[in-house]
Image 1 (cartoon, rainbow, N blue to C red):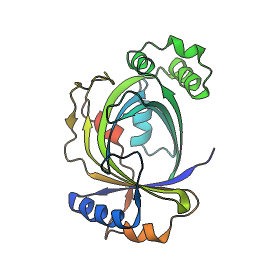
Image 2 (image 1 turned 45 degrees about the horizontal axis):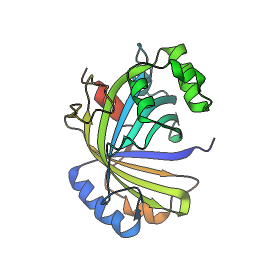
Image 3 (image 1 turned 90 degrees about the horizontal axis):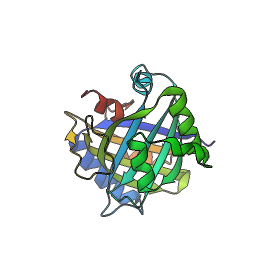
Image 4 (image 1 turned 60 degrees about the horizontal axis):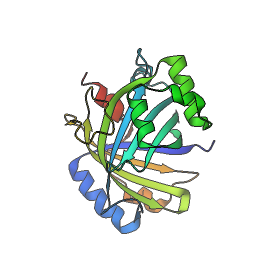
Length: 223
């Protein structure tokens, strides 16, 4: 299990404009981006006691969460993801899902997971049985991703964060989402063993501190 460093900063609209110009000069856009960006839609899972949410709000150092994610509302590429957090380190596992599989999970039809030979999917099923995980909320946002080979570094700018409120109809493009009030932009930086100086310089903003903003937690505040 190879953990990566992960740091997030809340940024303003003005910061976003500055960072976008800097990053375009020194980094390459992610090859999966269309016109430099893509839309992300995630369906998050939690139990009846809101374990994932409370661990985040209480600053628990070791956490994990499950989500289903697709990009640009394209159902041809859907992933089940399990993300581990250990302080400022993170690790993510992914497995591909078909649209039918993703929809059945969102609907709570999960018996078929028991027959899967995929370790991530079977582990997800175990958590569903043990902890009572259920689909909780849809989160959407726009992402501008940049990459830099040295250090396997990745920098993303996330904004226009929206919540599906109580809607969990993940694959329905007509599912209504609303903007999260006063949501900031998010600068996220990930790297392996070292962060190149060229990136440190590019993302430098006076007076900004790393923080632990959670799109999932912000979306759940609307319930």
